[in-house]
Image (cartoon, helix red, strand yellow):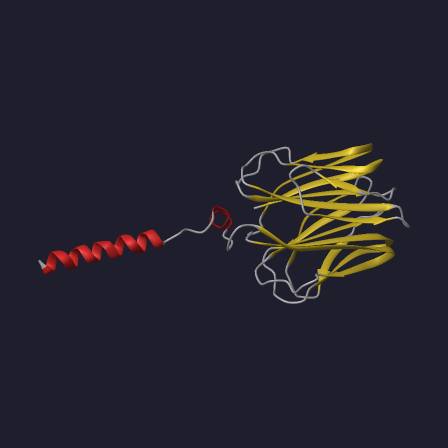
Length: 236
């Protein structure tokens, strides 16, 4: 009788332990991250007629997070982006139609106070937008670029479907000849705008987190019709 009771107790314990095991979220399983993809912080600035433009995150960056550094320059392509925290910075893409933008990223950040510096070879108006994301492994997936002339309705697509269900989609729109404000695209948010009313240029960035694969499209609406460089980039 005692033997039967002991076996029953062991079986009950096994089932209890199994029931208490809860796997990590789908996002964490697919990305190798530590949880749901979360926007930790974001910030932006611009500098008039400069070769460098520096911007510090408002709070110390967490260890192992994914960082996006978006830099745009009027009439030039920005050169390599740097930071003061010895992070390994990788270029995802550069683009220049009306000129000129680059998106750089850090796969796994060092913790601590972090100041990002955008650079350009000769003096131009420089815009810097920085983002910190947790729960994302950070491999680039799909990109799309285009330019649009004399419009307020902005759109750009990846052209082909993303490869994993849970990804971060990053949209960028740069107006090189007109100060401007923007309305975030459907499904997007948060966003950053730098509206340079002295140098007459404006940079807008926005993000969204998706849970299914597919062609990803970044949209936004500009307050004033003008010419725009448009970029969408996804990270898995």
